[in-house]
Length: 592
Image (cartoon, rainbow, N blue to C red; front, side, top):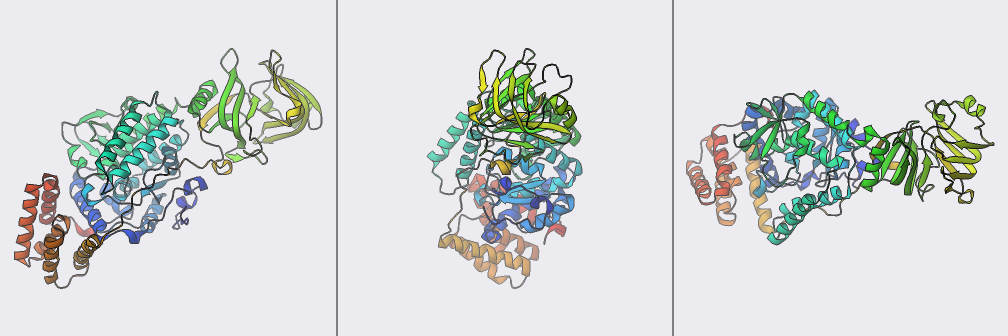
């Protein structure tokens, strides 16, 4: 992990260790003059177009998020600005696992991919980049209702059940996005990655809670519209950061549907233009739909339903007893009574006990390395659940340290042994530890033998919640899954470095003024050595036409660009949009 810097931002400083592992240094010095030109082009286009179709706070939100049109933002600038609205930002290496992404949102920290799209992907990239994350997500966070939704979504998503197939899909998406950003990527490799992604999408089986939540996230946070079906505005970051799709999405051939709970039935493909979009009348409606879905999730339903979901996930999960005790591990089995209530629970492999998301001393994964098993439910002939008995009550029933006791549960499970210790907190009895202990089920099958050592009995009448992940992630060493596939970072040859210098010269002239004559020399070098480039000539033309000088050079450049747009259709819209902005420059208040 890179050296951790919280940038003086309280939200970033509060991040736990298992999330800090994803943070990488921004390495601002690695951004090239071409990168800054890409940022500037996209931001100018966005400002020109989105001021009319984006949800109102987008434009003032740029300033509130510490963003300008002229240059890629530094993380420090963003954190200084976002701190004023109770958020922060960190840079990461491409896509991170969905569960970690959700947790960052819950901590009110924006996850920003440090890289920026290549010039040949200026309209859209399937890979997360700083344009998408900062120019897309950050400005709308200034809206209080929206950022409340975003952090609430993160807190719900952080508890979602996910499957092995979810991880496999994540890896396929990450691998494809990296390949598509590699200039020298082999077409066969891209095709193979696309086929693998399609195969995994088609073989997901029943979607997990995380998979369904990711759909709600996609159709709101990434591709959401707000307003009426007839006159929607853009608030989704995927649209706000795509100068191609932000235009095409408003056309009538893209269906606009009301956003409601049925939206979870719509899958999505990150590599394609969206065939339909969903319109919410208000941000409160987003919270209402999320709440409806959250009520179906294991962390709210608990009981046998939640335990079954935990077993199906085959991941580290946590079950919460009604006493407040939390059992973390890989759940493999449980038995229920005639009413379907869990009465005996088992985990396999390293397990741990916690309360209030803090691991109990002496009850970590090293101690419970072979798993954990314990009954749940009420004791027979006890009117009150054991968790609600205070020390006097426990002593009355003979449950006190140093004394032998026999406890029979309503389920028929019997525990007999010497009470070694009793753990209580928050007014609840949560754990009773026995020595010389025997545990049997209702037909006499042995569940625990005295020779196996000390027996820890979890106390709790019910399992009130089950969620994915550990209760105390850092203590459990539940380091969130991290991909071993690294993003692509270019090594520039001499010719490309020269192109960077030409871009920088144009940038310097725009910022600092001075003699314009040398721009003609830059143009000559571009013609001779970099005839494929269109953006640097466009930036030169912008300066010359605004200052009404070097008319012959300006005319040459315009003819060149018009010819390129005619000969190479993929550049036609980019160049014509550039011409439009030369004639209709954006307001300067956001330009440094």
